[in-house]
Amino acid sequence: MRPVTLGRMTVQKVLEMESGPPMPLILPGITAKDLERLAVWYRDETLGPTPEQSAFMMSMHSYVLQLDGLTVLVDACNGDHKRRSIPDVDRVETPFLANLSRLGLTTDDIDLVLCTHLHFDHVGWNTRLADGKWVPTFANARYLFSRRDFEHFGKQKLEDDHLRAFRDSVLPVYEAGRAELIEESLVVHREIGDGIWLEPAFGHSPGNFSVLAECGGERAIFWGDVVHHPVQLIRPELTMSFDSNPEMARETRLRTIARAAEEALVCFPAHFRDPSAGRVLRDRGAYCYRFLDER
Ligand SMILES: [Zn+2]
Image 1 (cartoon, helix red, strand yellow):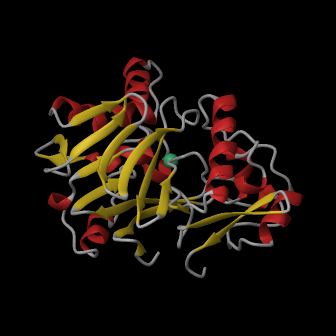
Image 2 (tube, helix red, strand yellow):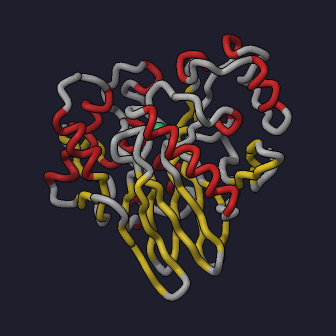
């Protein structure tokens, strides 16, 4: 993704890695006909003619949003050296920090870390290992976490990757006194005509947020895990297998997609493959996605 400029706001992407589980595992109910409709406007070498021959290929990346001297990291990927049960992300080492420095930024330059939600693939880089301990990676940053997710994973008994991530990538930040827990909507930054704020987009996780930003009449949305893959624009009503509250996730997904199209929001999806950024369009009752850059 090339840097995106909206008014005086810029958005850049920091790639970590890609991961592509089998399509039927993530989106049961998707059909060959759906993939045929998707192929009209989206090409991807990991998609075949049938769901069984297709991967649900996701990019793992963060966005760096800069506005009015504020540098914000939206989501924090998987992180290095984190012990996970999913082989694709278990104790990985990725060029994430090298990719951040390619933007001319160090970890000290991040003022604010906004985790749209607290799943393991959005919190990993919150911490890194220093002398055998997990410490906040972004030494000067304030971290904003969803209170609903924080309380949910804080009480969870099931020993899964989300709980492991809570322990190694969320709690150490909280215990270092660097985290703020967000209840509902929150304005993070406001100048005349400019703004960054959080809105509830609950359902995929109990407390998933969308981050919205505007400048010079242009408006951007970082919707976290409301939509993971372009194929969900073909069948937005289908449950994604990691949706924690399927009914609420469906309602949030439908509402967010409709709004993105109506308001011509510039979308920065958490898992769409490069070049990621684009707009949702509505054409004769069906949705499609147009990337800002050519694929
Ligand atoms: Zn995710």
